[in-house]
Every structure is written in C-alpha cells, then in structure tokens.
Image (cartoon, rainbow, N blue to C red):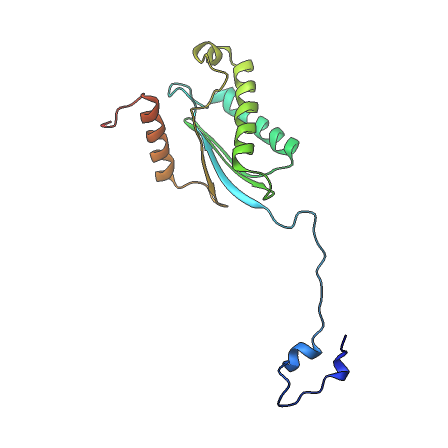
Length: 164
C-alpha cells in the first residue's frame, strides 16, 4: 500500500493531486436509510356507501392504528364521501401490494363489524371496490385522476355504462 507521501506528482503520473491528498469520510449508516412515499386511494364497493359520519370518524382512527402497528408513517389522510385517500411512507422493502392488502383487510373488517347496514348490503368480506390507485408521490392524487379512477372502476363493476 502506498502512502500519500511516497507518490510524487510527475508528468508521467496519472493520479490527480486531489485524489492523493483527499481524506475519505464515511457517514453513519441509518437503520432506515430511506423511505418511499405513496399516495393511495380506495373507493367503497357500492356507490351508495358513503364515507361520512361515524364511519368517516372511525376511519381516521383505524388508519392511524394500522400505520402505527405496521411501522408505517401516515403523512396525509383524507376521508371524502366517495373515497379514502392517504399518503404513506414505508421502507423500500414494503411493497404497495402488501400495505394495500393489509389496509383493505383491516379497514374492511372494522367497517363490516361496526356498521351492520353496510354488512347486510355487502355480502363480500371486502368493503372496498376491486383494485386500488397507488402512485409514488408525496402529494395527494390530482382530482382529475381520482375522478377518472372512480369512473373506470364503476365501469368495470358494471355500475355505470361507458356512455355515462
């Protein structure tokens, strides 16, 4: 191994001076070196099920509990009558399919247990419409994207025709 004092800079030497005399500094490695932010959206399975009143109030609490339980950071949460939207920060090893599956399952279970009318009308064990909308973002979904997603989902469900 050569020390910096043993290297002489000459015309034939190709090592730049700044490489010879520079010091290397290592930064400490964090347990969570970085996180990814996702904007997430779910809509109720039935267009007649609105996220209002007690159901909306409970969703705020349930979402916070789910995120704390799984070590996710909830940066934004919006409960609107026809959709649930949130921004989540997770480790890169956490897939969107995983956190969406957990969120769907946990919130569906709470809604169907605590709101008998909804359970009577929805015979599935999933309160939410098929699919979800997830984008890598630190900002909420644009309103046009939400509107288009809801319309496309309702078309796929056969609730509205393509002409509506």
